[in-house]
Amino acid sequence: MVSKGSERMEYNNAKAIVDMMRGAKNPQALLREYAKSNQNVREVMDYMDKCGNPKDAFYQMASAKGVDPEAILSMIRR
Image 1 (cartoon, rainbow, N blue to C red):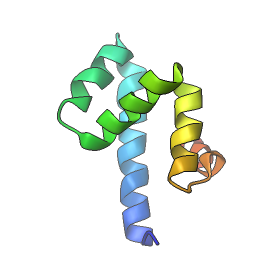
Image 2: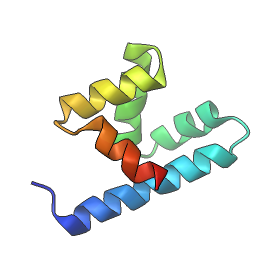
Image 3: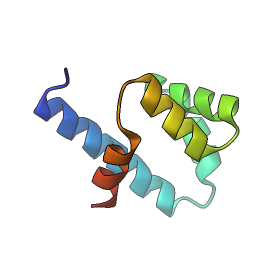
Image 4: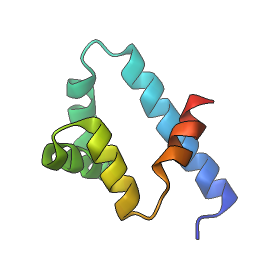
C-alpha cells in the first residue's frame, strides 16, 4: 500500500514531468535523455517502445502495476 505522503510525492513528480514535457521543443528527445538517469522513466520508455504509442503504454503500465489509469489522469488534470 502506498502512503498518502508517498502518493503526493509521486503525483508532484509526475506533474513536474508533464509540465516539463509541455514546454519542451522536442518532448521525445527530452524524455529519452531523462531516461538515462531515471529508472522509472526508462521503464516507461520501454513500455512505449513495446506498445508503439504513449496512450497504450500508459494504460498497460498502469494496469500492470495495479493502478487505475483514469485516477492518475484525473490527478494530472487538476
